[in-house]
Length: 202
Image (tube, rainbow, N blue to C red):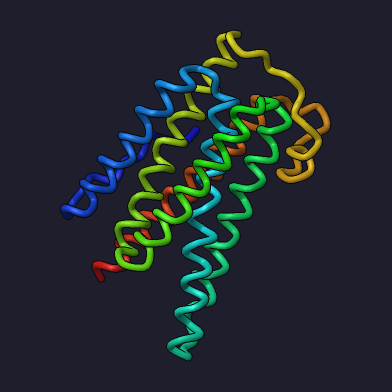
């Protein structure tokens, strides 16, 4: 089980990143409450943006500077974006989002893509710290989701085939197994992005 690891803010930008994340958390808690599957659909749409934006910009930076050495970071960021996309595809199968939630996804993605692009171009350290804090909250949310399943308030339905194939789960895998796999992914993204942010200090 993943511990609720928290990066303690050091710089002013860290506190800005944390405050922004807590604001987003308040919105999600207010709007979705304990509808964790529907929350995952909308938030995983947002979560799939940073890796793609950062990977694209890092790729272009390498081209402009004509320097090698960016490859590992680019691959890590693009793999993160793909991983978050698979989270979304999985929870679409589980939660069956309604039309309003689908429109909300479009609006949220459009706003967040442009916001994060500007932040990443001018303040990449802060951008990675925001993602690190986002992922901290994701680990917490999936832990709460797991608790709801374990206490019988959410049915532990069979895992969708897309999840079984992607995470190589057993044929009898359930929603609980999926939530654990997703939470492990989010913990990895949390640690990776906090490290990317801290690398700017060295």
